[in-house]
Image (cartoon, rainbow, N blue to C red; front, side):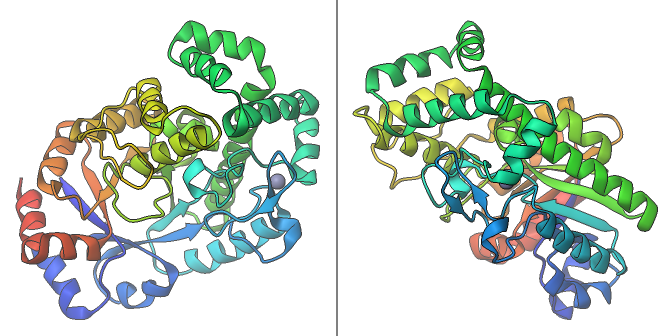
Length: 380
Ligand SMILES: [Zn+2]
């Protein structure tokens, strides 16, 4: 099993220490690339897919017409954002790197939105027009997404409970699909946008930067489709699919982390109704098929953690959903206090590499033992 590092150290002494224990590949932001490219390490760059431009017309807009920024990002369909992104990619790929990992290649999630309604986006004029151009029934989409947002954010507890009960069974999902066709079309529209973006990028890279790899940090499979990421359709254009599986990420905000995304969803449900927080959380865990390691918190101030089995289950799901041409390399939290067990469990899934996010977190959490943990795992 090989261990790669995301956000590695850049000073010579610590890089040599890593090389000595067998770490040979790293993933880093543009600002850290220069010193890494002077070393024998194989280096991938990370690129922010939809960086905000500072211009209001490039912002994402929610179903209530409110513009907002999320994860430093704007609307995935903004031409100005795409131009800026391609310029960055061109610059990165001219360097001596192996390839690029996309980050934030998605729409806003509950935990990455600064407003309660941010998840229910993007309804900027550009995206609305694009829905129609692609053959979607924009009015039905907007009606059903609006009704769903109203229900979750301000709805009656009894109606919301019925809705949550529907989400617990396949028959309930079919009922919801019939009742809210626009909601399901909206999810598909968002997956179309992200898929097309990655396809175009992959084609451009094959032509303009032949031999460089395209990789992506994706939401783990149980969350991915909610933000427009469809593993089945994305993997043919990705050499590396990297599900972000941070089972117990402790720092807030933690967008993309399963423990914080679920807490953010529970908070949205809880704030709009008289249901208890624990009940909202319990229902969501049931719907997503999740278990937690500790007692359920009674309010959103606490955090939850998923068991190690969750990391292996999601890695296996990513492998099952990805085609044979892409390699699955999960990225996990380096500060996990059960890191050696988590890596050992990952090895059982058959993956050959795992990425640790971030190097410093591992050093801080495991102190003098971090390099020993890595060396030990690399030997096996
Ligand atoms: Zn938009």
